[in-house]
Amino acid sequence: MLAKRGRTPLPVSFVIADIDHFKKVNDNYGHQVGDEVIASFGQLMGGSARESDCACPMGGEEFGALLWNCDRADAALFAEGLRTACQSHSIDALPGNTRFTASFGVAEANASDNFDDLYGCADAALYEAKNAGRNCVVSERDFENVVPPPKAVC
Picture 1 (cartoon, helix red, strand yellow):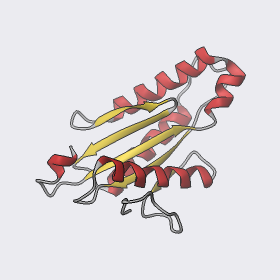
Picture 2 (cartoon, rainbow, N blue to C red; picture 1 turned 90 degrees about the vertical axis):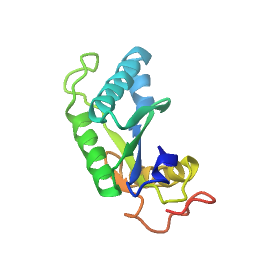
Picture 3 (cartoon, rainbow, N blue to C red; picture 1 turned 90 degrees about the horizontal axis):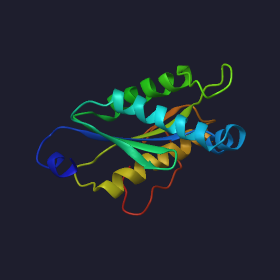
């Protein structure tokens, strides 16, 4: 998708998501419930992505979505939709009215970015979302004083 981006003027953005306080879910309710939370989040993200997008687990409780023809503002709207869907989504295995939340980092690819650059910018934004109290969306340009990883131009 990034190679294709280099040949067109269409934007590509990356959204990285991390389920908030996931270790507590496993510790308090067990790994089977944690697995259900991960599966539910994956279904929510997959159901929100378009056919032209690529949404997938990144490892553990972290997920990513590479969004074709989607600028940073629209990617932030995608992430906000997922954020609100998470906090209102009920999972039968969770007791009572317990819900889960997620934090999101958003970045738009520059013309010369490779995936590592784009991932680094989105990951820095995710780190800021977690520092801001979690259950929020932070775009790469919404914060200052964050040093991006080497070679990344956020």
